[in-house]
Length: 121
Image 1 (cartoon, helix red, strand yellow):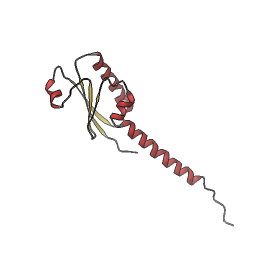
Image 2 (cartoon, rainbow, N blue to C red):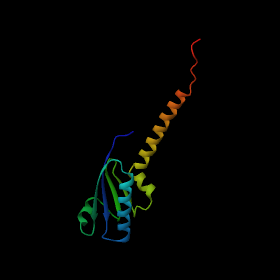
Image 3 (tube, rainbow, N blue to C red):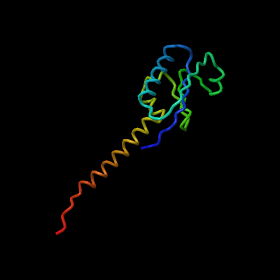
Image 4 (spheres, rainbow, N blue to C red):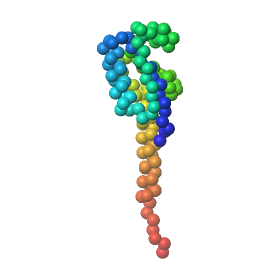
């Protein structure tokens, strides 16, 4: 099993628009159900802090930016495609890798226990 990762996330929104609110609600749901590590989420309203969006070269909202763990990734839109978000955050890949690894280990143990041991004559 992989060690726990620290996730640093920034969600750029433009006020209280329906897309911004949907993205925030969806992201919070994902964080509560999928994150097994430690995370920090900063919500940035680009209408109130346009300089932060400019510094980070954000061209559209809502945009989710994963700062840590590397590599930096950005997901643009209301985050309604849960699988795409999980892949973008490297959570789905890690989960699939862990599942495949655990499955392989279980198969290897099963193969060893399936061997017949004959008693010494």
